[in-house]
Image (cartoon, rainbow, N blue to C red):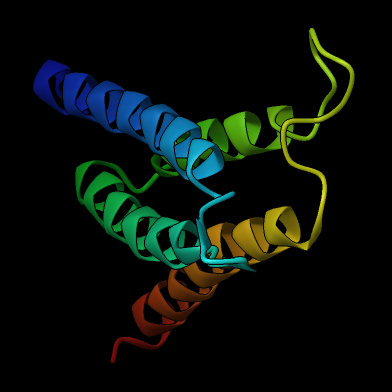
Length: 119
């Protein structure tokens, strides 16, 4: 991989980190009295796009670095770091993890199967 490809992969990893911060921060949005976890859907779509871009730069395991950065931030939102409790600790975090990890994993597995079968 060239130096430019490494730099672009690093930028995508930072964007995955920032996406994790934004999706965790805005997960608690409510409309009226109802919780609306729209950032879970945004995380799924954005992680697939970032994974697709990272896959265009490398075929190694480093293409999952932006997804790992996003997951680290999202899991850190579960931990009671400096306060009394976790930043997020209910069903919306599970939905965020499911959409943000399952959708890109499904995309990656389908892309790998297409690559192996040649279709």
